[in-house]
Length: 292
Image 1 (tube, one colour):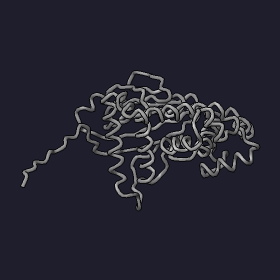
Image 2 (cartoon, rainbow, N blue to C red):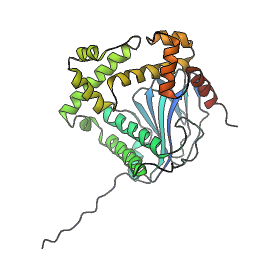
Image 3 (spheres, rainbow, N blue to C red):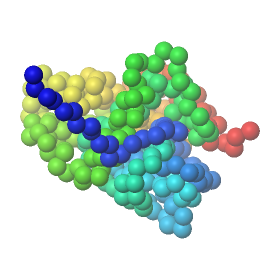
Image 4 (tube, helix red, strand yellow):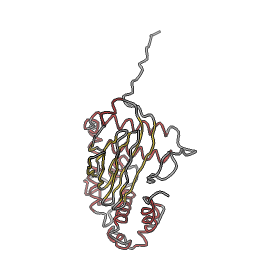
């Protein structure tokens, strides 16, 4: 009988606790008063542009940028125009975390997908809205999926490890995956430039020089939803930005996004967000008022 000897696997990064997981949709003129705490925090800009202060340094971060705040570092954030940010705070006693002190990074598709997984799993695991800036404790849902908390820890750890490795290599790990990501990004840009009108599957496929079936497969892999649904979601996200910027009324926003009228736009907005455009506008204004 062979004498097998097991190898204990070493952990480079260990996530001890998660404090908050936020997805913020900032209105124009939003400003957080600032804070410091004894755990780590990263800020990832998903849309638009934000101004971040860390101690005495002020920096402008745009889409795709990520910054880390070390324990004890005073920091704040403001947004001069509508923007979206992911903020995750956690504790780790791993010595290698020193690498992230003062780091601002431009992240790629692999890391973005991991951040999306952190957000999605947090929604499945914890109660309360992701956009509440006054959350001080995560409350577990009674019937969260099996292993959801472990996955959150795993996704954060994987994100940090890939950043430590300088992820250009990981993003190119599969030629097929790289090509698929490139086509998806190209289509995403095409959609973003055509939010003012309707796009058919045939038109999008023709733009990318692929078949409709390949188009559907690319979105299944990269977006976990259908092409049409993804395009509608883009319109609704842009509508939310317009609302937060307060430069247009609801009728004008509907026209800018190619809707036949404000009623159809409002109905689709409610289907996607659970509230009317006017209710969304009120919720944004009330969300960041001083806590009573």
